[in-house]
Image 1 (cartoon, rainbow, N blue to C red):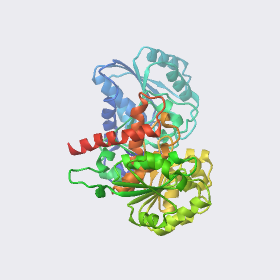
Image 2 (image 1 turned 135 degrees about the vertical axis):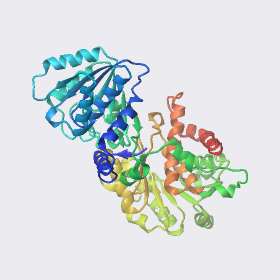
Image 3 (image 1 turned 90 degrees about the vertical axis):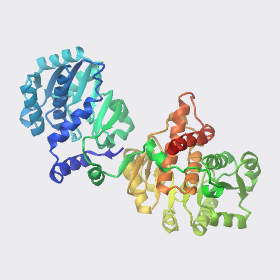
Image 4 (image 1 turned 135 degrees about the horizontal axis):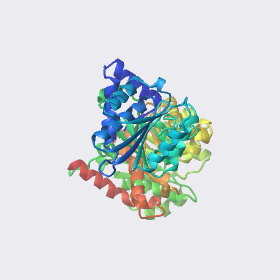
Length: 507
C-alpha cells in the first residue's frame, strides 16, 4: 500500500492530466464508483452528503448522484463560496440539477442559521453522513461557517464516512487544523495519507481503506514517494521456503554478540529468537560468567565466550549474519568489541541496544564497514544518534530515519508505534504490533529474528521488513487473549506462524 502526501497527490493528478491525458473528471468518477462500494448501501437508505466547492466536493456530488441512482434518500449540502467551485465539481453539480436532485448551499458570504438548522435536522433523520468538505490540499485553520458545519456533524451520532481525508486534517503532517471530522471510515484514493501515521489522528480517521481509481501501476510507481505500508503478501513473497531437499547449511550460520552480568536474558532471547526463526546454526558469544547459565537453556544453540579468541575469529569470518548489542552494557568494552567485529567481518551486521549507544560519538565507523549495517533504535537511541529531540523525531519519523540511513549508507529500523524501516530511498511502515508487547526483551527478540532472516539469505531490506511484520503480527494474535505479551511468548509462536506463511507459499 502506497503512502502519499498532499504534494505527491497533487503531482500525480497533474501528471495524469497533463502527461497521460487522463481527464480529471474521469478520475473523479472512478473515485465515486470506488467509494460507493464502502458506503454500506445494502444496510442503509438515508444519506446526507456534505460537500465543499473543491474537487473533494465534486466527489461528494458524484456520490450523491450514484446513491440516488440506487434509490437511496439523499440530502445534499454544499459548503463554501459557489463562485470558487472547481470545473469538475461544477460538472457534477450540473448533472445533479439535470436529475432534479435538490441541494442546499451553505454559503460563506451569507447568514446561514436556517441552513445550519436544516443540516442538523437532515443529519438526525439519516443513517450515514458522507464528508467531502476538504481534501488533501487543506493547509489553513478551519474557521467560520466551515467550523460550525463540522461541529454540527461531530455532535451527531450517525455513521460518518470521509472521502480521501477527514475534513480538518493536514494530509501530510496529520495536524488537526482547528477542528476535524471524526470519521468512522476514511476512503482514500491510491495513497494512504502520510498524516494518518501520526498517532493523534487515529481518533479522527476510523477504519481506513485505500481504493484505486484506474491509474496504471507504472504511473503510480513513477510518481509515488517510495513510502509503503507493509502487507502480508509482501512478507509471504519474501520469506524462505523450506523444501524437502534443504539442509541446515542452507539456512545460514549466524552469530549473536549479547549479554552481560545481570542481562543474560537479553542474550538468551536474541539467540532463541534466531533459532526459532529458522537459522541453520546459531552461536551466542557472551561473557564467560553467564555462559553456563545460558548454555543450560539454549539447547539448540551453541555458545562461546570472549576468551575463546580463535573461535570468535572463526565465527566472525564464517557467519552469514551477525547480531550485536543486546544487554552488553553501554561502555568502552562494548565499543571495542564492536570495532573488532567491524574490522574483521564482512557479513551483514545488525546492531541494537548498547551496540547503538556506544556509537553515538563514533558514527563514522559505520561507513567503513565492508558490508551492509542494520541498526534498530528506539526513539531515545535515535535521539542520541542524531542529536535531535525525541519530540522532533516523533513528528518527523520518516524523514529523520530516511535522512540518517542515506547519510550513513545503512538500513534503519526506527522502533515505535508503526515502526519505520528505510534504506534511505524507500521506507516501509509496519502496521503490526500493539501495546501489550510494550515490555523488556521485545527488541532482543526482533534482533534475533532479523539476524536469522538475513542469515538465511533473504535480501537485507526485505529481511528487516519481514521480521518486523511477523514480530508484530504474532503479538497481535496473542494479545487477543493475553493482557501482556512477552518476548518468550513471541518466540514460542514464531515457527507456527512461519509454517502458516510457508504453507500458503506452497499451495
